[in-house]
Image 1 (spheres, rainbow, N blue to C red):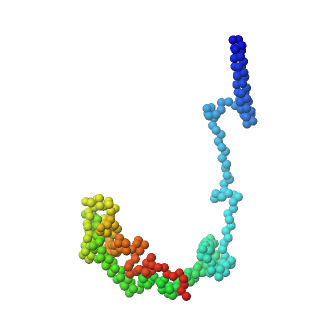
Image 2: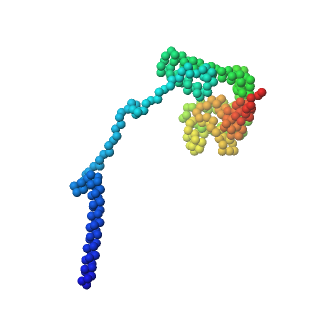
Image 3: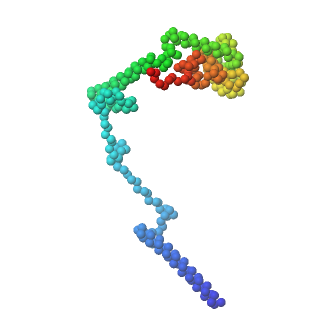
Length: 307
């Protein structure tokens, strides 16, 4: 019994010694670190956030003021001003446009920066070369379209008054024929409002259209038929829609007051588009123009220069 008590006392004493040595080692290490950092360990107390100590502010590096944000060590590049003394006429004439245009602008800037007689003269000299180069191209272009008539658009879109009159007659005849032939397959939806002052003017034009083509036009009051207004996305009165009978296909003709000529033209193109006779790429194409300059799907002109 007495030996067991002695044994337990010995174990407790040993444990206490080990804890003391471990604590002493940690404290010594921390104190040594504080001394190396130049802080007195035993007198450096009551510090930190709990003691209202503020963290030291970082020093801001103040750079010396420079001109226009540039560092003093950086110097602007010296500009090299162009001069006609560095070029021959042949070099300027045969220069690639991507090189000639910037050079022309450099001569202009030089003349503006220092408007001396010589600088302005040099600018106008190089400007004259550019003008003559443009004139040379225009001359050759006129010669080419005369020599190769297939490249000349004027054959399908004449400028002379007699040719213009003939073109307008062809266009009008085709428009009227297509509209008359579409009487049974197409109809118009006319959206109006009794309080719309523009609708009165539009109805007079529509009466003339009905008298000429005998088309069916259904009048729809948007106040009494809001569901149709919403279905077709009508936001303006008067509005005209071209519908393809027996299908769900339709296309707007006009929003707001439209003239007789405008209504005819858009109905003509809408009929051909809904019937699949033209594509959106061919929207402005008349039938008599197929295979010509305005037919985007016409075979391309031969790429080889004729001998």
